[in-house]
Structures are given as C-alpha cells and as structure tokens.
Image (cartoon, rainbow, N blue to C red; front, side, top):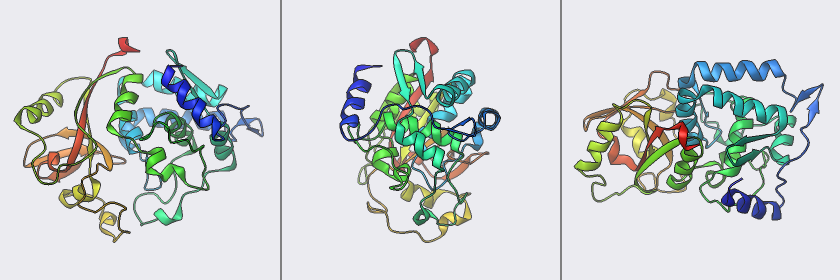
Length: 302
C-alpha cells in the first residue's frame, strides 16, 4: 500500500471507517451475491464496455470513463480485480491495496437503494448492478475529489451521489489512471474558463493527435450543464426540467467526465455512460471543458 493510501486510510479510520471486515455471507454467497451472477455480470461488462452506465443515481462518471479504458486495455486485470473483491474482500495491485470496507460490505449485503430525489426520468430508474457498485464504491473510497474527505460510506446518506465523496477531480482522475498502468499528460484544471477561450492551437493539436493513436484516450472534464445545450442526440429525457445545480448552470466548474472520440471545432463525438454509439456535439467541446487527460496504456508502469 502506498504512503498516501496508508495516510488516507488512517485518517478515515479515525472517523469511523473500518478498513476491512469479514465478508458477510448470506445463503453461502458473499455479500448475498451468487458467484455465477458475479461472473456473468463481469463478462457482460467486458464484452460491452460501451454499455457501462452509472445511471443518474451515482456520481461515478470519472470511474466509468476510466473503466471503459481499462477494460479495453486489460480485461483480464479488470476481471481479476472484481473477483478478488468478491472472493477475499480485498484486491492487491502492485504495492497498493484496495479493501472493501465494513460499511460498503454491509450496504451491498443489505441491498443498495437509489436516492429517489435523483429520479428525473432519465435512463435507468435504479442503481447500477451490485457487482459494479462493489467495484465502484471500493475505488471511490480510495480516490475522491478531496483525499481527506473522511466520511465512511453510507447508502442512507447516498454518498454514491455525493460529488465530494464519489466525484473525481483532475488530480484524482490522473492518479487513478497511473495506478492502473496508464501514463498521462494533463492539460487544464478543474475550472472552465468562461471569458477567454481556454485552449490554444497547440493544445487543440494535442487532442487531434491523441485520438488517432492506439491505446490512447482523451478523458475530458466538462461542465455538463453547458455541454447539454450542444448535444444533438442526447436522451430526450435530458430536457426534462431539473433542480437548479449548486453551482450556476453556466458556471466555470467541471462536473462530468467523458471520453472524446472525434474532434473538430464544428462537431465532436464523445462517449459517456450508456451511449453505445457515442454522442454528437455541435460545436467545439473544448469550449465547455475544464481540462483533459491524455491517457496511454503502458502496463510496464504497474
């Protein structure tokens, strides 16, 4: 376990988060999930990573964007990671350790419930499958916007939909890619420039080159409230009136992670949760982007 993981675990444990406990067993099944169900769902995720969907009941867009990349590059490693969480309650990757905390284990076993306040009629009306949640919650307990955001997981408090607990900043997203064998180049930060065009020609050229390279991904942190206006094939339900966001709708903070697939200043194509064929954006996505990470898979770094 790296020094920063040890420090984060120690501080969080002081605030009630238990690092590891015996796996709850129900009817002979870990977390109440049947072995064959777990294996079948992992196979589905690996077979169709483009269908990964966080739903509107979690803030796991950063983890899903990363997972899309990781599954495509190392499906065996992805499968082993989740199977180890299920079978032993902890996954060791290199010198780092990813434990299922007591709070996460108990919440999965009881059965997770979605925050009904998030029901805007968009996409699925439930949380992702419990196999995905076991994996995502374990990652979120390690990586988060604020490394020392101490709260132990609580489904009652719906921390899966708490941006500070389950969201990802540029720094934490880069760290996640590094931990799983990617080298990265980071451009921008967590805030969208609202008065001056944020990216110059050289940076635009970096994007154009990156999307043509093998084993390379452009992971973008955008302001979703501004982005939706330019999406020409978004889910119709996306236009249902929603509660006002905590930050201004045209504000300068990055709120959503996507993967760029095609780029020009007039039209772009990108992947985010559930968009099997990708989505089209009319205009330049960099206009609503706070920062982006060029992630290239290099297994020798793990």
